[in-house]
Length: 400
Image 1 (cartoon, rainbow, N blue to C red):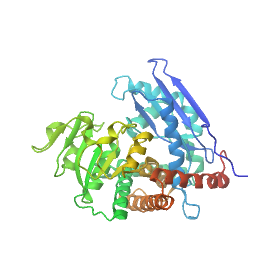
Image 2: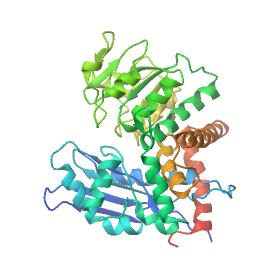
Image 3: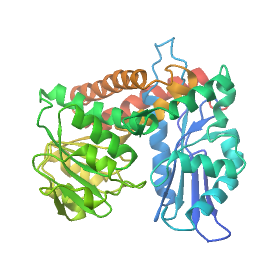
Image 4: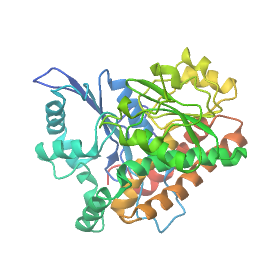
């Protein structure tokens, strides 16, 4: 009998920091072979409901990268999980909160939850805090599933040491996947790359890498929003100059702007004269109220859960397609596992080529299914995941 999908997550817990009173959360939605994967975010206002939704999304991201017919793949998709801390990462107390959270979650990280950077945190910060919390690694729960743990850990470490034009490969892998999602949508619609206008919210890890790949493909980045507001230029921004002028949180030093660059309010990226919108920062940024100003043809979700359901319904009724986060930003997570399990080596060209092939196939399948079923890309992605989850559960089991 095929194991059924639970309506509630397997594990859901709330932690309270004994020093500051701040809260943190862990949700394990599903296990595969006893392990679940999902990052750790830190942001003010983070909630258990938010983390629960993100964990369910991770289950789908993992399932969507499962190919039952590929006997050569070493990476077998894991279950889905997510962690969250209700704290501003810029707060002086944030690092201490992070260390204490990781100490509290240590039994889960050691046994079943593999994690890494997400919104508000860098991998360097997570790794440093994890070492202080007494952890071997934030992905040590997956070590028993590896053919050669020592070799795999070295391969991943080597991959994290790779930089391309000043940006780490770990940061670029996810942006490569987002950019390929955009390019696949343009190809299917017969729209050329040159001059296609893009507006992004966020120039951090995901947004910055996405901007680079799209700009180098010939698209024009006409607006970028960060915590200080929106920077815009109708003829296109100097992406490399903006990347060089950003801080660790993706905030751009305005001294680097050119004379023609305009500084606009923070929400101006939504109504920019663009063909593609890429929300690559916070969740819940596109609402039923502000979606009315959007004129873009595509919204490509580089962030997790940026478009609220009621907003997506209204956007769809206006012919605006939303490419969902469970597909678009899944390349980051997949790159980790392709590298750790040995499907790819610690090489940028190999990583980008593998990511492009996988994302183009996945996005293409999603768009084909949406067209065939007469539904939205998100509904198609969810249907694809629903088809694959029982196969994964039957073949690999939950706990073994």
